Amino acid sequence: MMINSKVILSFDFEIGWGDVTNERWKKRERNGVYKKLRKVLPEILSTMDEYEFPATWATVGAMFDHPKNRDFSHLPTKAKDLVNSVLKAAKPDSFDGRDLFESVIGSKTSHLIASHSYSHVPFTYEGVNNRVIFEDMTRFNSVAKDFNIFANRFVFPENREAHYEALAQTGYTKARVAADNTFRNRYLYRASTMLLAPPSGREEDGPNGITRQFGSMLFNDAGKSHRVPLLNRRVSLGLKQLDRRGGTLHIWAHPFNFAESNALKASFIDTIKTIAQKRDQGSLTVELM
Ligand SMILES: [Zn+2]
Image (cartoon, rainbow, N blue to C red):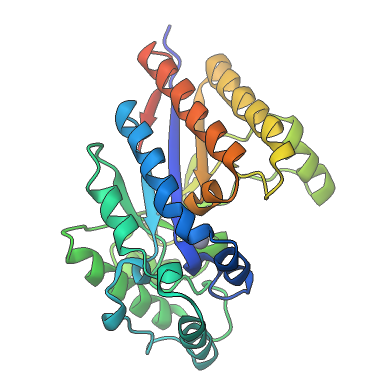
């Protein structure tokens, strides 16, 4: 009897945009993280090509828009002023990721481009409403269209869910949301992320006809490479759980994290190989979001 087991891999593809409303991009820029990503991403992509491993890349629109076309006039004043001041202070490569984006869409593997919004301003940020998100998503769609990409999958900036109406109005049908958390106590939850198999990346009907797809686990060591063995253990618990009772293991990651930790990058490459091997043996499928 064949158990239905699948693995989904999705990336939040964002470089500095992921931190546009906090200060962490500054430290990453100082540490050369975005620069180093230009060396690390090709390594990841060539592994994915070698093992025919497709992923979903939830990309920030402003990251692959031409810098001279960037437009934040739709944002509420506080967010708009913040984004403009960040862009003034940052090095161009920390926010202009056209080269990175082109290397993904130019890959031999057919990856799926999803949206991670245009500006990455969280949907719950001060002054953000359905109208703002409609404009933000419309801008994303128009930049994507220049590359003949029509995205209908979405990942919320900072996983903050809101404004489903605007997502539906701009053509989106599925959104990835944070991992299912059945623990009320946050210490128990943190312990669970180290000790237990990750929750299944199940799907459920969400607001406005949009499917909510739960992530299972974030592939990151939080800058502490001694945590990598725990992360590896969690992936293998997740894979064992798939063998036992099927379901979905949905792993998500931020490519720039692989430029922050060589141990994390090596472990990620190993994970891709392990999953591809299980796929080739017929015990699971690798699917897009
Ligand atoms: Zn993000």
